[in-house]
Length: 123
Image 1 (cartoon, one colour):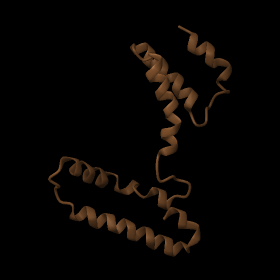
Image 2 (cartoon, rainbow, N blue to C red):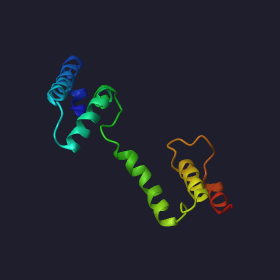
Image 3 (cartoon, rainbow, N blue to C red):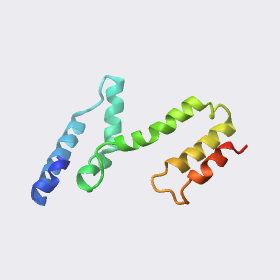
């Protein structure tokens, strides 16, 4: 539905969003106490996150998934798992700091490439 935002009048889009939110609210109202543990956890999560669930429909530029963030962190996860840099508490701390600096969407410091190698090699 987010793709249709620019293709329909704002009032119609708002009504469509409200219908979707209303359907979820009705479903959650009927979901008493599910017998299945996984279903109970899902209902609890949906109730807790209800106000945030449809942010992507209301706020332009918000993606409906976290796919981009997952893809951005994937190289850091691979390095962490293959480098053995996190087998000690100190190594884990260094790995966390370096990864944060290198993977920040908008680094607040100068480009890190010139300092990256000495930083990683330092004791």
